[in-house]
Image (tube, rainbow, N blue to C red; front, side):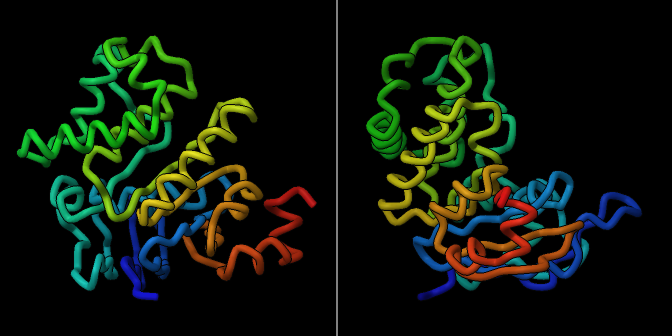
Length: 237
């Protein structure tokens, strides 16, 4: 399998604080990779650094063989990486349509925007029903769908999802994970940060465990599910 994303020796600092140290991971085309760890381990920092919201102190981020570390966020979106952040970050007074159009800001072709919009609405039928509603009036699950849909508006090759099930009921969480599976079936690679480690590993091909800014364990999803340390610390066994 060809690697679409390769991260090597990644270091990130917040002032004097070391947020990430010697992080290395890779993703194959069309793969789902889970990034797991406790709160504060550096999972969101990793996604923000890949998407250009944070600049690495040291190291490499290569997308389709091209170095992208330090590029601006809009250039990274243009290249094919989209980020649905933790907390959804939708604009509450924008309509669903307007929120989705925010995700298309790097695309200038109106026809392409319409095509991408139709793909998103087919994936999320509830957003079609709520199309003219303000984003802030949507339920938590609908807002999460809107956040993912907005990221999908750039037609990414890699979709990064940060805690998509946070604050959602088990039934809605199941719906969100089914949607993630559907998106992946269209050959979109997914880098998934998720508090529900068991559900994430059920969905993923492979996973990495991040502890205090460093990757400590990696392997296939099945290997990680069988690992005694992972079972004890993250799977509640």
